Image 1 (cartoon, one colour):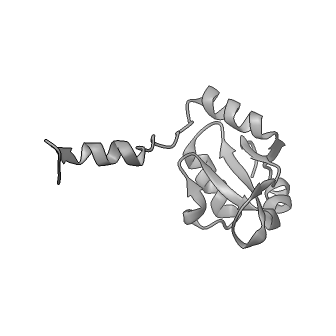
Image 2 (spheres, rainbow, N blue to C red):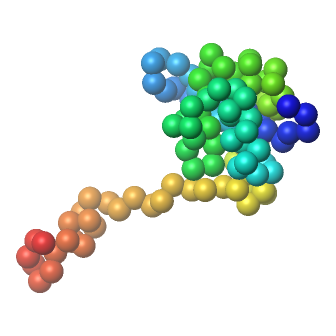
Length: 108
């Protein structure tokens, strides 16, 4: 692919099947990211909020297709700068969840 702004960090994140995983992002658009992922033959289930998880077995191919190797810090920095960072929703602590389910001391 020519002229893409797709970035990938080194496969250093432990994951399923005993593999290490990378993050693949675009700092331009999600459409560009999805198109690159399709060319890399990544299944849509590997997309998580603002990036694709890429197994170490596909890292070299991603780079050959034009992904720019960067640090994990650069991944986050470039996502923020592009306005494409999508954070995980805050989780509710179990104690707070139980309190939210109670009315007048009774459980719902």
